[in-house]
Image (cartoon, rainbow, N blue to C red; front, top):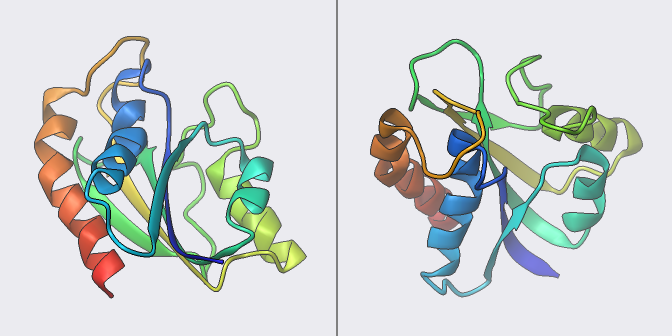
Length: 149
């Protein structure tokens, strides 16, 4: 069983959509005991298998809610996520839909926390926008605090 699984959702070639994978990479680079950090494309049904053996999951993704770019929010998956805030990209069945399906099927991990960082730009291209890049240290600290308990 994986004690803590950190999943960075997104695509590095879609500007701010790369925030999840970037944070997963930073967490992985810290080599924290009992923590596995990976990147994932975000197709919702695949998440159910990905976290099936994890005790705690921290999922990181870009959001598109209309908040100021770089805004960091946190949700506990014990309650439904706000509708329409997570990009689906090329998948019609994204993170929010995957979590809700897992809830209905009784396949949520024992603990699932979602960290959302508001995107400024989800167009094709590499690198984060200045506002999302500026939020990176605080977002990393948020994830590390969750890992620490």
